[in-house]
Length: 126
Image 1: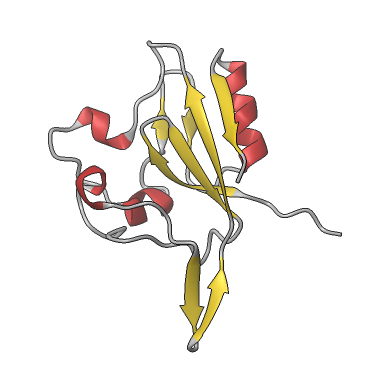
Image 2: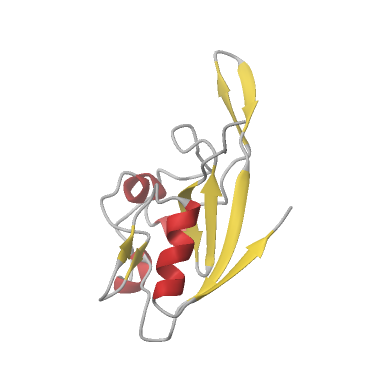
């Protein structure tokens, strides 16, 4: 049995969403700017040719030391990015002086990077 790969598609403060279908993942107002005032959590399904398909998520809560971690909206009074922009890798979801984490990063790689830089990971199992 092939293992499902989950990829980063959305970050809301210290909560990172990973999807098993990055290419089809969408959410309410994901094309609106600023994303932090408009975007909602990822949808759990999508439609194609009138048929609905389920999407699974894994949610990771994380902490980084105080001197680490900037989300795209942290640098602006009015963030110029939408989730669509961020997921198209115009900017990373998490930017620090030592590393960047872009959309599409695997769940495993995300955990490794956070832990490597003395962060903490909390997994929510549904």
